[in-house]
Length: 75
Image (cartoon, rainbow, N blue to C red; front, side, top):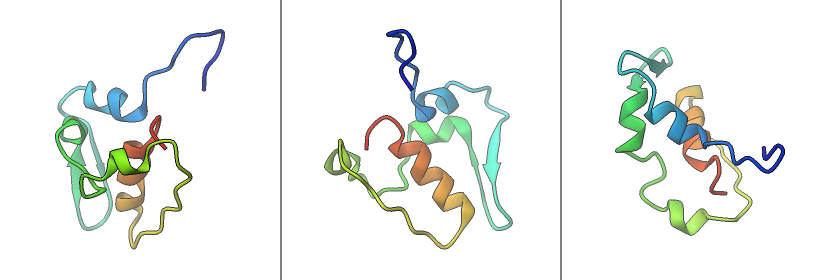
């Protein structure tokens, strides 16, 4: 959200700059916040999704969260 003309950082930027000891997880797996800056859950196709409406359907909450963090500020 853009308030008073100030651009907020994306979720991906925020979590990538978080302390190394922070994780997001579900019952089967976990991801360190700092690893989000180096990886992708969208098969490297983020540029193809820029400025588009995207429907996210996944099999797990963790996968959904990773996709939404990566898409924030892009799609």
